[in-house]
Image (cartoon, helix red, strand yellow):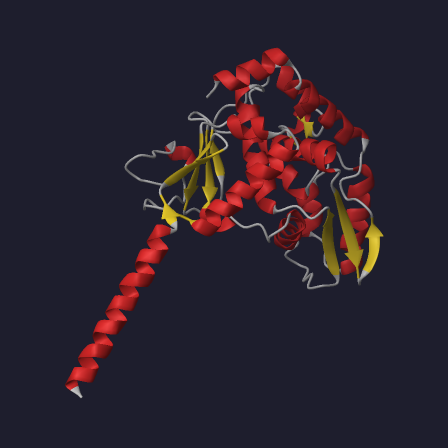
Length: 306
């Protein structure tokens, strides 16, 4: 009986070592794909700017085989649209244990929350999640739902969004802490949605309006107004001027390269064909970003930031 127990124990240990070895073989500290560098966070090597690193867990992160394939899929999506240059603006992408992804602007490095490395969670899912957070008096459940056409992974939005933060810092001249320091270029963008006479507050009071909503119909009414009148591309855009630019930056690429639309369904019925349809303010922002990204001198300035 003791011999059988000993054999069983040895077998368990050997199997554990085998599966651990297999798992290790599928994890790497770093990899490069089509010239884009991805690294797992290493507290000895990576030193995020302290003010931007709140919440970062100072522990080693390894990149799994599944995460590698996911990130390679995003690179392939961008390469197909001739947008690989966006991935080349940061010096590297670092996977980190942190409740959010962020662009370390002084270091031109993008840190990606490891939990967000997912192709199944869509842009529409993220929109719906944020709506739930911004409407604490309402339980959405399945009565109000959003659908992206085409269905795009939220990871794609996150990466382009964070690149947008680097552009906003390097070209528009926002401070690296995200504070607004007016200059001739960035004022043209900021004045579309932000009220100088009221301490540069959101002209449309998006978050305040969402917080007061208590009924489904009120939210549908608000979103109907948002689709046809707002200058913002997402409700999250109204949380700050830098977020407004980053979300507009995403929408510029989503609209021009993916013909993206965000549909609203209420009780299973299509109510709005696109929450981000062109409005005067949105067209002004798209035009502004197109001017920045198509200006050879400005783009050369961006590349020098690496």
